[in-house]
Length: 99
Image (cartoon, rainbow, N blue to C red; front, side, top):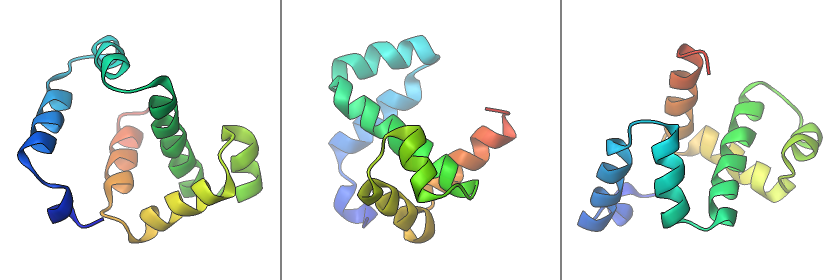
């Protein structure tokens, strides 16, 4: 995604708000107000798919484990390989923190 198309003051404000959250409970409270349950679950599913793809798990196994469609798995893989390295950044950070 072209970050210049995404970048604007409202998006900056959203990201600043997310960065101000201090723990998981605060994240739950904020995201429950901000997003639908389906939106939160979809984002969580994509992160789980990215983690499994990095571990070399097959599409079939990922679909069984996460419930993601092959289209979603393929899309996540494309962003893992050709995206802005956001998945790589957060997965590396989570791994270094033992999570």
